[in-house]
Image (cartoon, rainbow, N blue to C red; front, side):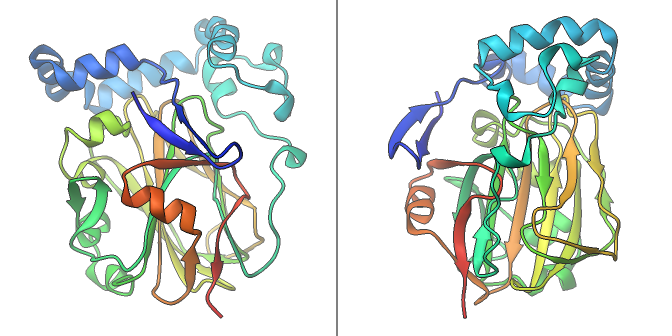
Length: 296
């Protein structure tokens, strides 16, 4: 059971988790953990399932998934019958009118839909993965020089569950560097898994880049793959100017995570998000929503 905070209703809600019984079994039972280590976390397993989700055979899953998780298709560019496969549906594009972007240059916005945790004044060697578990930013990106500038800065973790819009965007105008790719495993990024696998973000496949933003300094983007995520697709053009809200990329099928690191004294996070993060409770956000502000 995953409790999160809904900012709109100011209530706590329970997430409807896709494959919840499977996740609990895999990450809690001896047999499940054995399968996890020998099969499920391997690239081959995710690649095979990803291939199925990209085939026409998977198209029959679309309507069932929409109904089971009450996905409002009015928010998206295409109708359910337009998709040729489950992955085609999974990477659906949202209508711009459904995700109004806060264009105030002093506003820090959410890079995508999902549940977030945010921390200020971070220790690079003890970045919080989930309450009770930490990891090292230097190990996460395998680059000490790039990591060092984020000491005492901000960390924002956006978890995209399988029911979410799975494209991620730039939080400001600016120029983004080339993407660095790091091979790894394919553990789930669901909180159930994060509580069972120490340093999970440092174990999984991941990609990172530096976004030289106009208003928030150098922002480190880290995209983390997960079980059944066939690919992390970067759609931006490196070293070319982008505008706030422009698409950076998307994940194919599976829950995934994007982690942002901001330099110290560049921004502050909204109090409701910070307070809930301290309690280990995620906050639901939509792409373009204000989550903080620049420090002037």
